[in-house]
Length: 463
Image 1 (cartoon, rainbow, N blue to C red):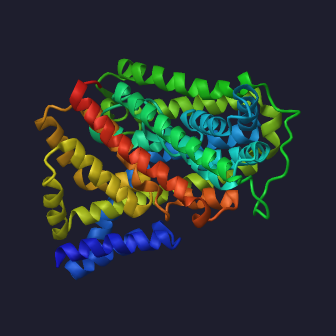
Image 2: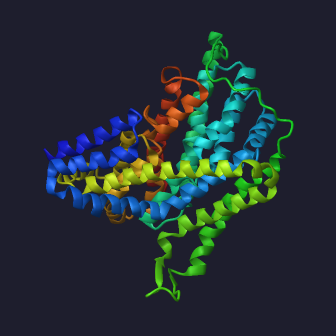
Image 3: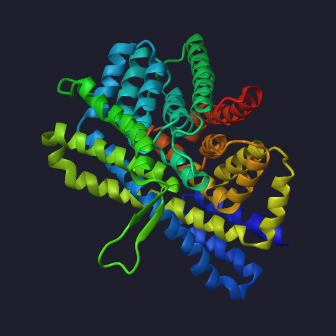
């Protein structure tokens, strides 16, 4: 019975997310419903002592990353830099390579720190124009955007400032640059297989004589590129974020040592923070701050007029995204405390290999919740100690565990109820029936990449 309660809670949360209901509301309802069925008297203490503690702890660590990432993406959009990057990619890569252009631009923007939701809005008008000129079916466009924005730059490439690569740092005491060789190998696997698939789909449509399409929804206005910033200036803040993240990751431990201690006159005792658990977060926050400052200085006149409203939109988006994930994290903490979860843990422990265990657990929960960060948060809240113990017992570096967990979170997360998938289809004016096949293909490819990376590690020992 206890196992059924846990499964029912997960199924209820998945159904709510699929139907479009707020996870902020339904995650605590699902968690506390499971508690009520287990022990009604424990509902209030568990809500206050586990669920809310987990929510607050998550926001304390990660909300600044969500906020700064959203603001950075917004100023990149307001400044016209994102449009300039897309226009330059079309000019230099060539309009005849439409899939390669879209994947490259989406990858550059997300690896540079721009939110994938912002990328979808920024790239779509150019992608529509490019696919129309190349006479490629519009229905294939979401697959290319998904490959560029939702896959290798989100969690595979080392140093990416996306939240899926930041969350594991506090659990495993790693940095965003963990297992760089494995991350690059995984990214190359996804690019090679993904581009081969997209080109196969393009050639098949061409052979059938299928063109861009007609009577399509949400077609954008023609893009004006006459007054866009120079592409080198546009790409500079993205490069700055990457370089600053790399430098700060290495400098922060030297500045603060293993433990930072601050004594202020108004405090009864010094504030002490373990540097190792915060390096990844502090480095990304510092890098995003520098990127925002650079854009504001170099494009102040352009950004100034719309910055007030734009920043409000960014803050609202950051609050929603962080609270969604924090609620799922709280849900995971509650579920992990229930007796039914012990049965789940024993089932997962039946997978003897610690990396495969972690990959299956995280990818499954990401698929159930429809969220890479949410599924990872639930898994790490409930099972991170088991993952660490298994890896240490097998002599596997935690950097490898970090990379596997991060990549697994971006595996089955893009199932039909995923928020990014729904947004992508809404923006492009397409339906699941028309375009989800290609998004799902990308989902399968990036899931396979996790196990490919595990195999490479065991075969070569590369980190």
